[in-house]
Image 1: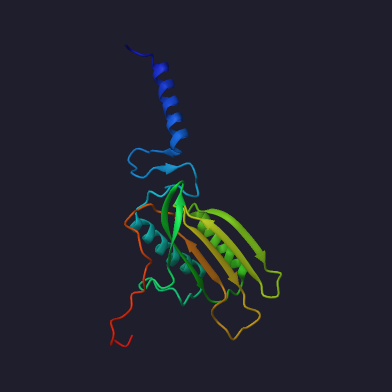
Image 2: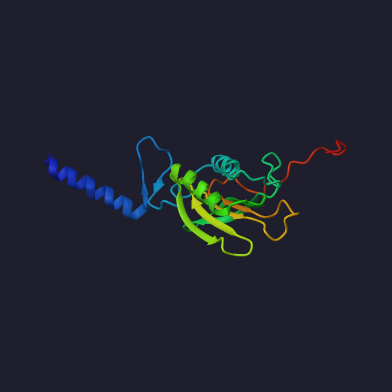
Length: 200
């Protein structure tokens, strides 16, 4: 039995709407990961652990570079400070990376946040919040944004008017990866220390 083109088109549309309504995912031709309707978490746990890890580390490196500040506790090679915590995608339990870093003082917090806001927007990030405390005795400004892959970054630029002899531990950077359901990701990243007796 042959269907008219209009009926076939209507059936295809209804089927697509039904699938989207049930799964919440849009399957794009040539894309292996289902893309969800939630722009903050577009891959819904389907990215591999290695992909999430690399994106997380690259985001830290790139953000630090854009701030122009020094974050002495960050060492990509050692993984110091990186935490692996439990997260959820619907009813499924997964893992995500996170880190909190302290860095140098920002001479002009308002300009620092404006610069990184423009940079993130140029990369299609979603700006979540901007908090202005530049009228405080120690001026600061905070911006939070989410990358197109679902990584959340919070950058707090602080001027350091209260303890000028202390050059680090002022501005802060918090990065949290998207959640991955990849079962290969278990255990907490451990620092890569030198073998005993190397002196470093």
